[in-house]
Length: 273
Ligand code: NAD
Image 1 (cartoon, rainbow, N blue to C red):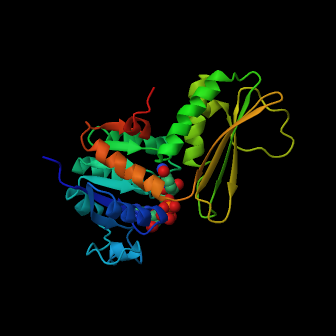
Image 2: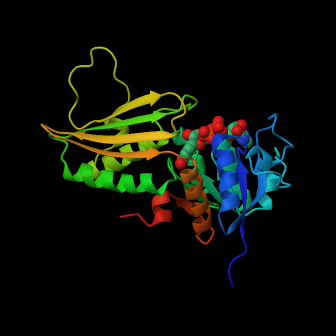
C-alpha cells in the first residue's frame, strides 16, 4: 500500500521561495500543503495561502503559530532567514518532523543549532536544492582535484537579484567547499572574499569569490579554473525558482523514511562519493 500524501508546512509563505513552494506542492504528487506560516505582524496573516501564491483559494490561511502547524505535519520547508530557521529547527525537533532548510547566510553558531536539532529531527540543509548545482559541485570537486593549485587559479563568480541580503551566495560557498575538498584544503582559511585597492599578486592555492547583484537574476554561478594559456569554466544558470522548490519537496519525501540526522542534497540525490 502506498503512503498517504506527506503533509508539509511552508514557512516564509509570502516570500519569493515561499510562494514558489506552495505552487510546487500543489503540482507535485505525494505531497499536500497542511499549513502556511509567516512572521508575526506580517500583512499576510489570515490570508489564503493559495491566493498569495497565485493558485486561487485553498482554504489554508496563513498563520503565525508555527508549533501548532508543525505538530499536525510531517515536514516543514524553510526558505526564510537565519534567526527564523534556528527557531524552526527547535520546533521541528520538538515535533520530530522533517526540516528542509534552504535558508542561506547562516553562521557557524546557527549550524551548531541545526546539528543539535538533527538529533531528533530529520534535517536536510543545502545552499542550493537544485539537481544541476549539486551535480556541478561534484564536477567542480573532480576538476579541482585534477587541475593542481600550482598553475590553476580557482575563482567563483556569482550574480543574483538586487534583493538578496547575503554574500557570497550559499551556492557559491557550496561550490567553494566542493573545490576545497577536491584540493584537500580548508575553505575558511584559503578563501579570498573581497579584493580592493593595492592587493598584491594573487596568493597561490586560494579560492577567490566575486559577487554581482542586480535586477531580477535568479542565480548565475561560474567556477573558473585559470591556467597558463587556458581557462576551464563550469557554470550553472537558474531561470526558474521551481528548481529549488522541487528539490526541497524531493528532499522532504526522501527524509520521510530516514533516521533523525543532518543530511545534504548530495545524500538525497545519491551523489555522495
Ligand atoms: P524573501 O525575503 O522573499 O522571503 C523570506 C520570507 O520569510 C519573507 O516572506 C519573510 O517574511 C519570511 N520570514 C522571515 N522570518 C520569518 C519568521 N520568523 N517566521 C515566518 N516567516 C518568516 O526571500 P527568498 O528570496 O524567498 O529567499 C529566502 C531564503 O532562501 C534566502 O536565505 C535565500 O538565499 C534562500 N534561497 C535558497 C535556495 C536554495 O536552493 N537553498 C534557493 C533560493 C533562495
